[in-house]
Figure (cartoon, rainbow, N blue to C red):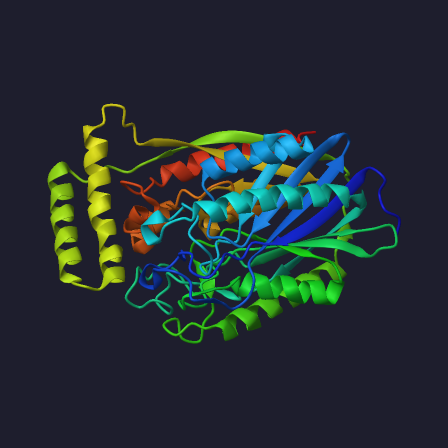
Length: 441
């Protein structure tokens, strides 16, 4: 195999495990500071250059990152590397065993020192990825996995919305591997959509993405980046959803790694060596707010729940979110500038025949599949929870069936109301426009 001279790729990684004692994020019943570390949280950065353009793809073992943090860090990375802000993508695994970062402050307090160090680490790892660039060729393969299961189905959650069958997920796994002139792996990217929610213990863990990456690295001898996809309605296929554990995280992580490796065995080299980035904005629209009377009732109920928690500090902290949610609703009613609209970024990166599209929401399988099906790129990885996290974006079906994701999740994301299903139309259109700019004839 001869490496394509027009494409250069480098990768570097770093440990981003917080100190024990920093607040966790992801699960409301497990609020509070971490008591230990099961396995390290990691950051990996891929730097790709072709035809005079360079892009960075950074992947974090975090529940999400705020747009404000990303904006500041992009500027620091740009100053250190010369790579434009809009050529940098920040993807998160949405791991529920990591620290609070400001995305879900209702579940814990972000640590400013940690976030500052995280930015510094990102700069250093980005610089290292650039320094390690070498000529490479991209090989891409496809696999199928039902490691995930539709958590909204009756079989998984009989008291939930009973929306669809257990296998109604995005079962597609995409693997892309950069190889040098001797055909040796430089880095592997794996894209699959599923929540990393294997345990509610108060310890830091990378969950199944960590096991997946380690197994791919062990087999290939090169680093691995995991890009979580359209997994808003997918959890791992636990034997008992009420008794999750790290055994499933290890088992499914290793199984997904083998699926990726087998996909690459049958993979084909990419024809293009182009590298580019494009972005569009989409407008998300809130559903109707609760009335002021309803908000006051919510606030009273929240205050009663806080009082009922007594001396249980963590329970009181948990119940305060109801009061804060009611206050946000009332503030929106009182704000003459309130429009119920939020502009979000839909950024696409091109690395040869491969596109990665960042969706800054919890994206459902149906929307991820629609984006991929309508993409102008030969191969498209949909990256959920990336370049920010504005919460669940319900499809029309999800909104019709209701349930946590459609009805009660938005207060955790500090939103006064859920997003309308029509917002998904705008997001998909912006995603397709970004992809079309990169892959137009």
